[in-house]
Image (cartoon, rainbow, N blue to C red; front, top):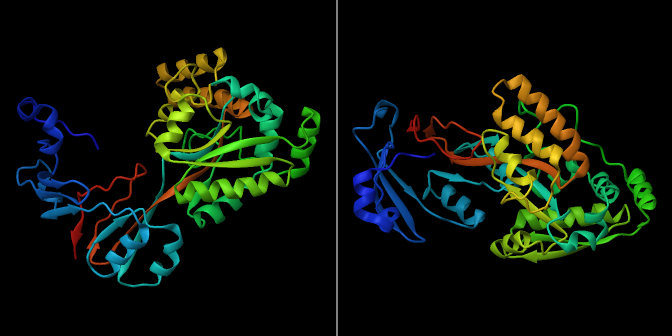
Length: 347
């Protein structure tokens, strides 16, 4: 959550301000040890201090979810974020802990190179919308969620989840239809299309890619997997050096933040290289329309076009998962995945 910074401190510290920040939040900065910890202490003059009950917070970066959970169970930690979905069942049965969850405002999807580079016309997936439709129809989103996320995600086919008020109900989640997928490939003249699916090396992305590969094969697709370090994969995507790409987006509170930069012509996050004047016109109107009902109509129009063109095949919306000691109460979940310290207290 953004905080106003102290102009005096920012000017004094210059480019070192990040190592000694002075802001307006409920806690003041104590120290940061790179790759080890960040320590904050309660600020007694905070405007909403009556709702701040924790005196000191220590943030510890622990990459491995198994290690995070072990530290929680041993009492070394009071709360962990990004609990592994596979650990939810066993932790639910342990009365010493509580689990909190909420559906993210972002999404997990597969971005397809439809115009980012010359490669778009060198593979049937990027060249022909019928092949992209066949690819989507080959996928069972419920199955992907169960296998890749242990059920801890909401199936979806748009840039916002079906529970979002701006979800386009005129374009519901399509059911898997392998027979129709095969027929579309026959119509396109490519009964056995081949393409490469680039995927980051994270475990979730790897699982998604493997399940997608197996499902698509049943419809006739030969999907080659290309595991790539995340920063490198983004660079390759930006250069258009890919056919399709397993890519997640953290999401923004307003749906515009989930769609404009991805579908509008020549936008920085438009890795698909998608560009249609009518889509740009709808997106621009949605940005200048204040009435929610009118915006909904525009998003319905947008979905009717973009979801048929499929520059991105949306798969699901993950659950943010936290686990904490039962003695810690007042946990409030927010779809952006950030923990709000106001209200937290030890019982």
